[in-house]
Length: 293
Image (cartoon, rainbow, N blue to C red; front, top):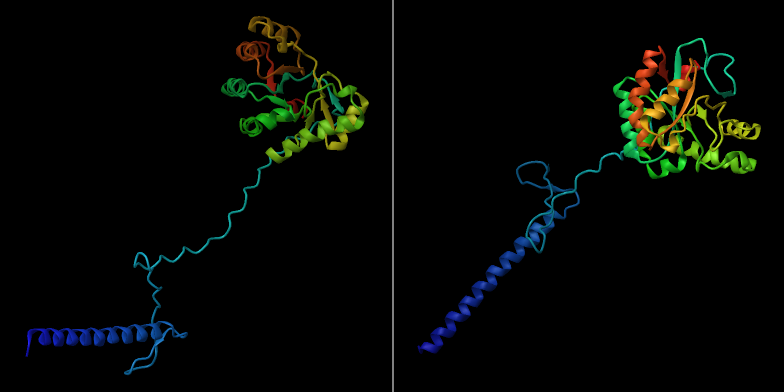
């Protein structure tokens, strides 16, 4: 037999063997696919009843790895509810609709602040009061809350009281009833959304006292009482700290409501000496609600 014929025979035999091996693989793959696609996911054994067998997921054609089954989805986490501040103490019977001062026979005063300005200065002022155990009343401007929404909770979390000082701090007395109502209601909406309450007090903007029209619009929004003041040291003009504390301590009396402003460095600088002077006079600073309780 020639060498070429022997080579041809060996090649033919090798091809036959490969064909037979490939047929065996195809048969195994068919049997495996049949078993895996059984809708009952059961393997029938010759020596016993059907038994459950977990079904392996198919191999990834690229990585030759089985995919990791997805984690079961947990229950959806609801949005946290905004906690409402604690309800202030009831006001004393006969508290007027517009409060200019509290009882003159109790040695208490309320330090109230126009809420606006640099939030860093506002935070520093709150911290100065808190270090002395003093609680303030902040009459906040709604447009400030649009820019600094975190300040609403910051005031309440420090134990202070929060009230409504209109949305844009314009001359509310010169507005129409509808315009005045909108100014009060828009600020109230922000307080409600950010804190869970519109607050107890409303203070008119650009006016010491509320006109009958403004009081009525405040009542329609939900404010039974307007908070005015009897001591105005005009800290918004940025006097020296010495001048400011002298103005406050000269004018203040038992029951006084003092009108001050956040966002002015002179007010922060004067606050410790104001608190010292009130203490020497036997006057305790409290919130407006405590003053009128």
